[in-house]
Image (tube, rainbow, N blue to C red; front, side, top):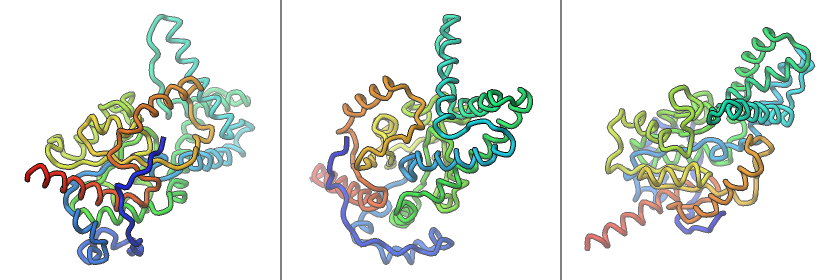
Length: 325
């Protein structure tokens, strides 16, 4: 689904600033920016990011969190909570919910990823002979262990250049408000390398947001509300960057945002951690194929983002000049 794009410029990589001065030294750092970045500075007011598979590889992060979960449970129970086993149990939770709703003639009630995972852990414990009350208590505690591990592994497994891309972007566009719009449980505030750049985050798992996960416009509207205090972004330029055409590019465009599509070369797959059926996955791929021409810019790695933004804004400036002539 990737198509080549010349909408980003190749510029020398900047040296990493000391972390404590990443945002405080913008004025001094601007001297080291490429000419294309300086020319585009100040034209973007908002940038939002997807998190999973945009800033870190989800399959590896979840695999690491699952391993930490298994290690935590090992002295407590013989329950099998390795990744594949846990994923099968999560799919069972989703299937059983659908069957229960169908049995009484009701539409299927959505199940959050958090609910599926907690229920799967609890079921693995009861299947191993743990009593219901203890299994419920341990599953709640184990889920918190898993969440902390997820963020720990996200910090350690950031895509190469992710932190520097955020740093360069924050310097190139002074005053830009950066946020996250995710369907997952990644907590940007718990990832020290990235947290200083982000002003807000919205998760499709949050109470008050779920079940309106991406590609619903509701989660994007909530992001706009948090970023602007409810005023909306009007004529300001908002760019959304993500790795999913259906969840990121299409709804962001509908919201009036510019879009940067991170299309990883090669099929990295989902590492067995998707709860979708094969039929749902195939339908999703078909939708994505129909959306391949939607992005304003396509990049193949997150470190290309600052130059892609500069080129995008430069092209908009040229187009405006031609229109005004």
